Image (cartoon, rainbow, N blue to C red; front, side, top):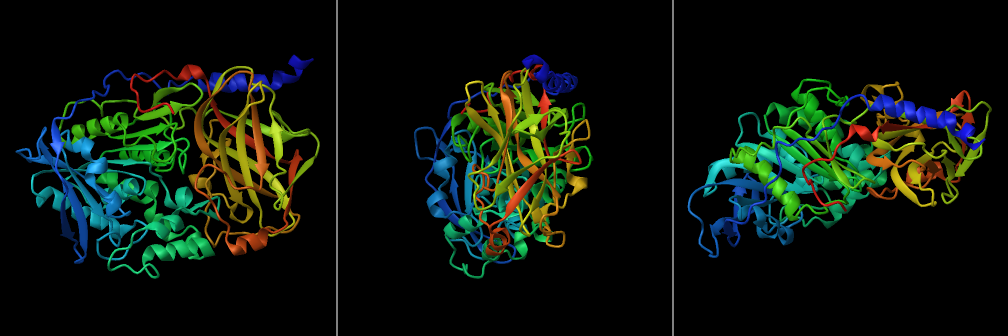
Length: 584
């Protein structure tokens, strides 16, 4: 009896895995393995200076030079330059604190204070075109005016120091002295990855604005970053998607310029980052831009890719391990390839996407993202179950905005064979609310036979922000929605009519994880914001529209709530010959 009850679910999973196994999306690439090298130089004490921008503003810089090993004497000759741009002030500006690895291996390292911070002049902003132009000016100075430079420049840094590389690389123009960038701990889209999630403002930008050491000419009450911060906290214009955020989008606005400028990039992010897998959108956009495909489409198995644009996604939190030898050496070989012309072979790969496979504790190299477009859809059904077929009778479940500790939980039968969750997830939830706004979070877990629950992904969406942008959404091979995109504009905001059913397509974060046979897939719906990425804070207006809301979740045949997972066969993937970073 038990086997008969599970057969439909197991059959669907098996068919999906057979279909997903067809394209060989990942393969071993034996042509490059990083070769750690010992230090050849020492590093000098910092040399402090300023660089004048095109508008007359002075930017503070500190420079560290290679020295003869074991001495403080500057090494003879000229060297390529690595530049990092830091908004956090002189306490974190010292190049020897994180650039010494590269100086000891033949690079000059320059750390600049971002405009309006530290001892730099001007007013600070959240990235943007002005900071991009400052970066371009600094590149030109580092190539042509900096003592000891050989004229080749690269960009280095993590988090803000990673994100501002995109703006610089977009601003330098073709035939620049900028030869390569390495944006680590980075996102791909400022509005959706950092500023908000599902229409709920995040605390990240206001938190950064509150700790920036303002420069001598900056006014923290009126500078541009304060406008953005205040809007996010108070529901102002920049709390909605707009042309302001469009201009900051790495994947939409900056990547086409960077590719046109001919600048290679290697990026890094973590599955447990502030924005999990935040560099994947940039990877997809860069590959598509290089081959003149639509920017926002998935890179599918069999499509052409280039080793000029590579991405690493590890099992890490924000910034973890980025100043340790393994990742430093990978970046060094990247810079050696493009700034020194070293024949490393690093760019000669047909699988430039490097993913840590959670649950298998191994690295896998891929070309496509997602590696497979195979999907399986599970429907919310009676008794808190997930089934492979839609419900045959109407039913409902209820959650309460004021009581998020009472979620709606649904479990599948045990999976019959190993599978790989390999991409973004979509939860399509039909619901009605007693209030004009709804706040719904969806979490996908794996439940072991022992009962241990492991979170795989989550996402959130405000009901008023449900307008789907079909042209930027992703669909699996079966036509099922796997990565919903929303417009998030004030013009398309649509509040709920009390007790009228609407559909919310919730985008859950991507993952790359083994689902062992015997485990159950679990979906949890609640009104509590997701817990492991950018902290979210509702505006007062949003809170007023949510207070005391009661949500009725539909399980009817004509309004069948569901969750769609990308699933692939484990046989698609082989272990990478490269250690792309620590396994925890």
